Length: 499
Image (cartoon, rainbow, N blue to C red):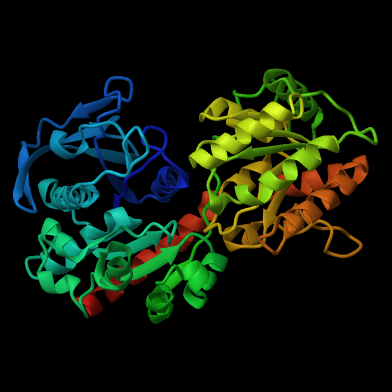
């Protein structure tokens, strides 16, 4: 099939979070299955065009598009070879994309013209099939930023059409990110004002809501784990106000578990590590732990009665990731001998709190407040436990990486975490689990899981079996790509119902 993907992110050159990893890995997995996948992204001002091998497509002329009351010049660039398995196109528009940043300014504030950026991105993407005489079968939009492409597909191309059937799929990576704007902002999108007034597609609680519109406009909708799909259509907490919309699409709303890119995340061949290892040769993990402790100036400890495991955390410092559950425990656990390697950026209050507690416990708590890809890999490899106490988690990739690296994750039973981690101390005499799971979003519940983990960690034989079970888990992209194929087919065959 010919698949046009529209996304704001793609690893490694335009990345904020897991969306970038998914777009990269899924597109490659689909290409491995002989699909023609083409990804369209904005050409952000901070990208190093030479280093990233981004070159202009000279066969395509400069173009213009109307966004609101303004006319913008744009043109297409390509990343990598024209013969690449996955073709990556970037939209250059200095007016809208020429500044640094993907969603936010350097100070952290969201771009005030995000709707205009999304509009131009979508308009440009939908021109490509005709420019290349390439019959597109599926338009795959990722998250709210790409939703205008689905709306334009319905509004502008319903009669004049695209080359190919152009069935549509919306993948929701995080339902909390909805792109909400004043209703009058519909002018920016170039769509009829009635679409932002009840009962129009864009209207939600008196405002313009892109994600809500995408849920109703797409031929098929999916999210990134089966459990999160169920949570979001049945509860207001996880549905973020859109649970009724998702329930109304129940027959065309599915959960497809993300995969892990084991080409990048494999301790047996990870070049970021001081020593490689596998499930049959775990000695290298001990060397990784010792090297991580030296790098972060953490105490090197064994399993004496007054010493505890080394716990890693890699992620955004935001409430969603459960940082508020972890912070109240750090003083107590550090005093009990636990060590922590924490890497991430996020809310200023949480970064400040991490700096304060790390300064109080040198040798026990290390906090790195800037993202470092190599250090992230070393934390996965060198830690005994990986912390992921998320209040909600659509899928999560970190727990999959941790399992592969023999670092049992400690997770809350929510979203994709519930789909991927089995509790090691709640599965009967055989202990068939792969990590440690707790239910309530309270510090005390996380503490209980850590105490259970510590107890098992002190038994080397049981711990080794736990590590090897986790390392044997296979969350590769092949199965997910095959499932997406089925959703693509349904998008094509049901597309007529939305005309």
